[in-house]
Length: 126
Image 1 (tube, rainbow, N blue to C red):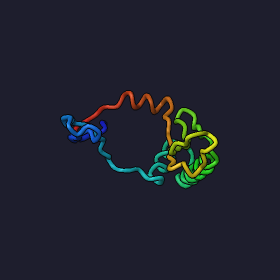
Image 2 (image 1 turned 120 degrees about the vertical axis):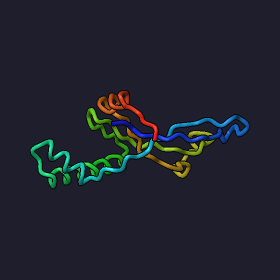
Image 3 (image 1 turned 45 degrees about the horizontal axis):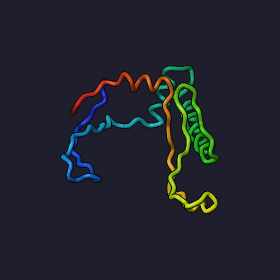
Image 4 (image 1 turned 135 degrees about the horizontal axis):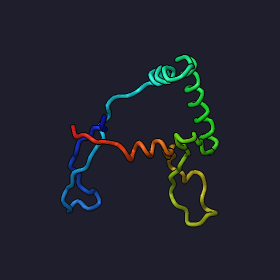
């Protein structure tokens, strides 16, 4: 199976005088729900779909709780999650305050298995 993509022409907004170039955009092949994941995991283990779903819901809750505390959540070979922030600058460290923080996002760093999968991806233009 291959990751499907399209190509779109885009210009550089910082340099509009430069010629436009063509760039790839990955196209989704659909989504997978928590329920579907639970059934798939259950089929590969001795755990029921309901128990699997309960564990995945609890994992989501724990992930949220620990990230809100500023912790890095490491899930073994799967990868790690952490919160990243973006802020305006202050003239001095003493003048910096939390109101200068404008946004946050959750960053995921893939582990060994996902990196290997990325390195072996096949692509198909649609």
